[in-house]
Length: 299
Figure 1 (cartoon, rainbow, N blue to C red):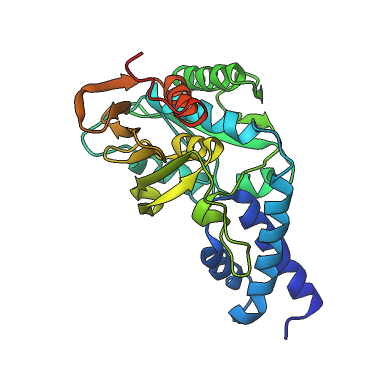
Figure 2 (cartoon, helix red, strand yellow):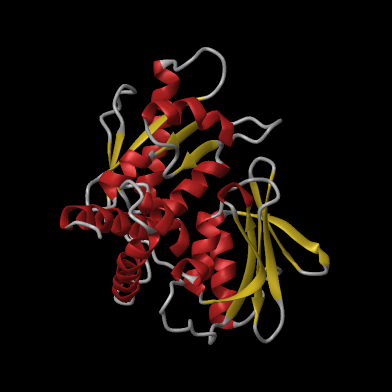
């Protein structure tokens, strides 16, 4: 039997992990089990289920555009610009700086990095600001002027995407982003025992591969535009990662990440349609596909 204080710890952990939005039900249960010494999954599952139910009910009332959408959009733009941008990267600041270089694919170069680690996420998700670390890659270490240039670029991109970024220009200080952390759960990330079956009445069906995050879904998943957009904006920009977007009525698009990183779209079975797109253009193409039922890549 779990004591009241232990139940509170478990619920706090479950609420954080559900709100974070990265893990499916079974993974949340396993991570909650680490909070206490062998509490038993049978005692944990009802608590996690309650948090899933509450989260899914709450997200029904959220606006289409969230701060987290703006943040992911900004991070993908930074990735394309040569700045590795990651959320929930490692456990702490020291590990984050030590391991951020592993996010650069073999044989490729990046100019710099920006990340928030798990402790940052634990502060931001309940309602605090999101703290970001940043720096440069390459010989010479963290030269203050070069590090400050990365900080300025990160701050500019965040602000351009409608986020409030507070930074004093000093490379010794971190960037703070004021936001409300709300992450929708879709598809497999919204499933939990006892939940109502998800509606299959969606304009799209998607399949995708995001290997660095362990997400490979070869079977088609019914998807709304918001679901498809979320997969697009949160996918790790690694060479070989891809998303298939298909209309239920037929036709569709393939998005894939390549070296650089570069994002390309193409029409299935039409090699001549293959072309590089910006993150903003990619989002527009998916919107047209879902909301207008047509492929706009060759417009």
